[in-house]
Image 1 (tube, rainbow, N blue to C red):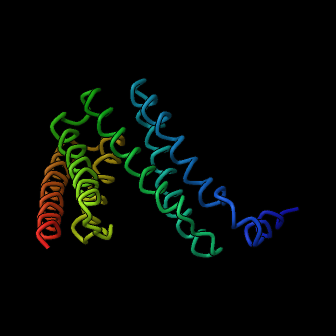
Image 2: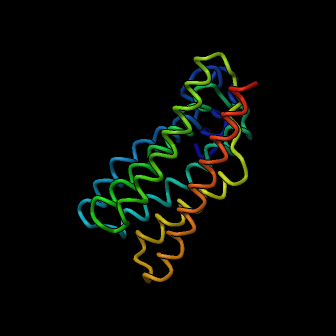
Length: 189
């Protein structure tokens, strides 16, 4: 029955549990992480690119589906960014390990994320509750990080890859710096 899955998405009882369709899609994206890493390690950058693109599409799909069906959940709010960061961080580290990207960009991307998450946790423990709201520079940084990975996996000419690499590095430093300043202001308040 072709429309049965659509009816299941609108079933009010189905929305109450943590395993909604959007959360299942997010879990599948999380499962794509080891697949992409293994493909890169085995030199199958072409297939890794396809899985990476599919993961990106799933990121948009799960968010749209959660809004369209009213199945947003606390689990999804946590799981979605975890899946996104797990994919990006793993791919950066792996691409650096196989010398497709320089190791310093992987260190920079990972350190920025650790700094932001660690800073947020320190502030939270200290009683400073900051809302987790991505800033415009951070959104641009994420787009550049994704573009750099896609270009690296696609094997584009070195000049284009280098230009994207330096833009990504600059936006990573800038967005990380802005978050540090915001955290310092919050802790002083």
